[in-house]
Image (cartoon, rainbow, N blue to C red):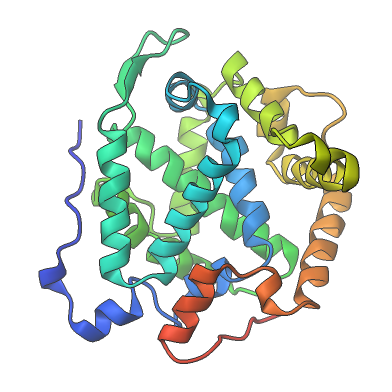
Length: 293
């Protein structure tokens, strides 16, 4: 089995490269991750990730009390992804080291396959990485972010730096959309909607919320609608594996809903959909980047 890739070394970059981060304002990654539809792509990726029995077992087995801090865990995951993209290289490396240290302690045996694993096994890290890259790219393009095929390939290639941070062996990481598609085609026979996967998706539809928030605001139905939209954005083979009736819109309706979501947020100030981490990255490198429609 391949060993984890070593963390990038600060000795390999200049002060200016550190300031720009691993991607920078000229990257396709900044365009994609700065788009409002990025957030729905991230949720879609969680639904895809759950279909890997061993990866999902790692989540379920090591998430005792998960519902008690569900939002905090989701927030920490988002902060890690945003820091890796918009932070300095030093900040991204520091956070990646923390994530690696946490994953190193987690292990288990998945019942349906009988496989003993560690959460940081390279093939599991590669699965999570590819799910995120494919979901975010396909969702933002479907939402209306204009990218040429060459730019889409550039995005996948740029994400090798992200994979390097988490430890995915670099020789295994796809560098184009075609390579990404080939990866999913090869792994599909080993995927399944285990009970843990179905429960994980149901938890995405019905996360814990304070009673007052559910009663006094439309938070619950709004969140459920967004989760339903993300489920409808899954490829047909993934929806078929889940076999959850009543959750999927038609492809045309899903695309229309996604485009309406993006258009609505683009009409708002960027503070409405860009976190402090993202805004700090833009400020650090000298001004806000404009989105391409």
